Length: 421
Image (cartoon, rainbow, N blue to C red; front, side):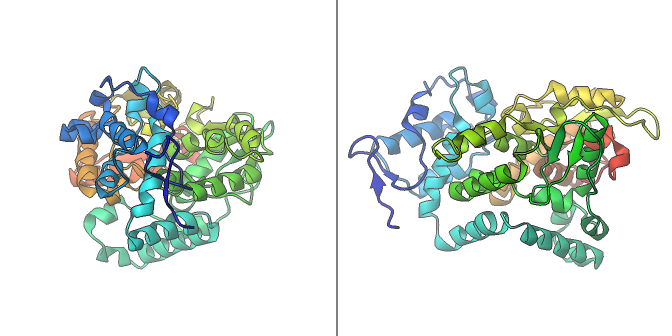
C-alpha cells in the first residue's frame, strides 16, 4: 500500500493515510496550561519544552493542521517520551496522552529507516505473538546462563537480566487449583519466560482467595509493547487472540502492571471494529491486576515481612490509579511499607525505552535506585517486569544490597522463589 498524506482536516493535514494518527478531538483537549510539566520525567531532566507533554502535543497539532510533516525531528520528540502517563494523571482537562503518543509513534514508524523498522516488526509483530518463539528465546537465555556464556556480556546487562531456570521452564504451572469463580491467569511473554515463580505465587494466592485459578493453554502476549512502539495492527491482533483465549473466565488475572493497564484498554483499542468492540469492552471489565485483588497472605515461614520499599509502576499509579492496594497487600503480609522519594517518577524502563534511549534511561534508573537505597529496606516490591530489571540494574550500579521481588511473591512466598526478579 502506498502511504500518502491524509486530509482529515481538509487539504492541510500531513498525517499518513491508512495509519493510526492522533485524533483531532484528543488534540483539542489540551489547553496548554503546563500543569503537566512538573510531573514529566524528561522535562524535569532536560528542562526543555520539546521534552514535555505540552511540547509534544503542540508538535502533533502542527502536523494535523498542515503546518509541518512527520519527519525525523518529530520522530525524535516522540521517541524520547517515556509514555509513563504521569502527565495524564496530573492533567485537569483529561487529555488522553497515552493513546495520543501511541498513535503518533505509529505515524513515525512510516518514516523509520528500513533496518530499524524491520527489527521492530520482527520482534513486536512476529516474535511476541508466537508463544513458541518467546519460549525458545527464554530457553536460549537459560542455556546461556547455565553454561555461563552470559559472562561474555557486559556486567550491566548481566545485572539486569533475570535468572532463567530451565527446570522452571519445563515444569508446568500446574493443574487448576481452588474452587469458586474462574480466574484465568495471563501467561504473557516476558513474565512466562523469566518470571515464572511470580506466576506460581499468583496462582496460589488467587486460589487461596476463593477462586478457581486456571491457566488456559492458549495464552500469550497481551500486545502492550506492540501498541507502545508503533505496531497498532499487531497489538489489535494480539488483543483479539487474548479475548478468544480468556473471555470465558469470570476474571482475567494479570501480574504485570503494563499488561493489566493495556488489557483494560482493549475496548478502546478495538472500538472501531464492529465485530469486536462489544466483546473487547466486556473483556476489559473482567481484567484485574493481581495487586488490586483482595488476597490473603500465606503463613510467613520466617515471621512478618518487615521493612519493604514500595515502587509504584507507572502503569499502576498513572494508568490505573493503583497505589493504596499495593500497600494494603504488603501490610497484610506483615510489611512495613517505606515510601520512596519522588515516588511517582518513572524508573526509566518504560518498555523498550531503557534500550532505545540509554542516556535518559540510565539517569532515571540511578535516581530510582538511590531513592530505594535511602529507605534502608532490604527488599523492594516491584510489580512490573521491565521495572524489576531496570531497578535491579540500578541497585547493582550503586552497590546497594536490596532484593527485588514481586509483591505477590512476598504475600505467598511458598508459591514461588521469592526475589526471583
